[in-house]
Image 1: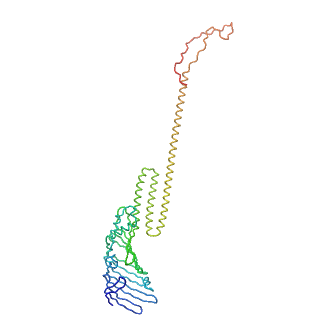
Image 2: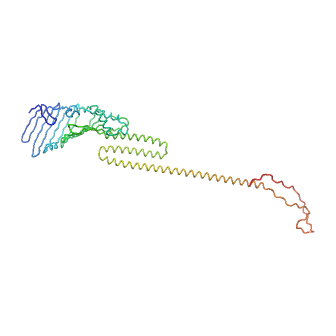
Length: 421
């Protein structure tokens, strides 16, 4: 049977179509189905069979050189060739679609992704500063979306395979590199709800600007929603984490520079405390990055973030305790220094008192010696002439005469000044 137009479903109409319809005891078969579709060729076959309350369907669809712009609503340009073989059974059309299973493959030729500039990643990185406000997710999403709209991404020739199970077509992970970007494509198409969830994970191939980590953060772009109106979404959580980490690292570097200058002027104990603070900051930075990455991957990261917060509080208390102990040690050192100074002052006072006592004693001895040297000589007794009677001699008896004596001149008194007291 040949017809000018054959409508297979919403938005799927074959031009210059032809097919062969055969019916027998096994069911109905549509064979040699072919027609023009999307500027290319549509071919396939379909077999329907019923067993009791179940309807069974199997078939194959081949697309050759179909225009991608018509299939994707203008999101992709180029040509597509592909094949799908599937089959399933069910009691109703909805269950029949839900029970479909099979596999297929597609090949894109000279494909381009519209409104997807491959240089957008580099421009966003170059325009992102080190301020903490730059890490806001909504702000980064707006920048990425605006940068992506600047041009199209030429993909060239791409081949991919997919599986169909339970009415859900799942694209096998596809890794490719184009225009300085490494991309990993994955996604699903739900034939039951006629919706899709297609994702691209992007990383730059070249080195990032100075100050960025060697391992570039990943940006995710997804197309979600009904097949008739997919909307593009961006996932910049990993990039936001790195930007926040850069801001934190810059602040840590500033603090470390200040602490280094303080350590040069401070004591050894302050240097040790600064080193502990630097190690703690590094640990907090590593913990922060780990928590942020795990938060993006799974709900478990929320619990780990709470644990990290508790650890940070304990570290803060430990730091406060260390500062208190350091202050206590400084106070004890100050008191010991004051005690040493008081002891030295008391020792100087005692030595001065002993010196004064020694000098006073020497002066006293000198005064006593001078006083002894200036004492006048003993006065002579009464003069007794020879032949004079002596007191107490009995009358009438003449005492014997004494031998003659020599009268010497009396000594002159000492004329020097007598020292006081």
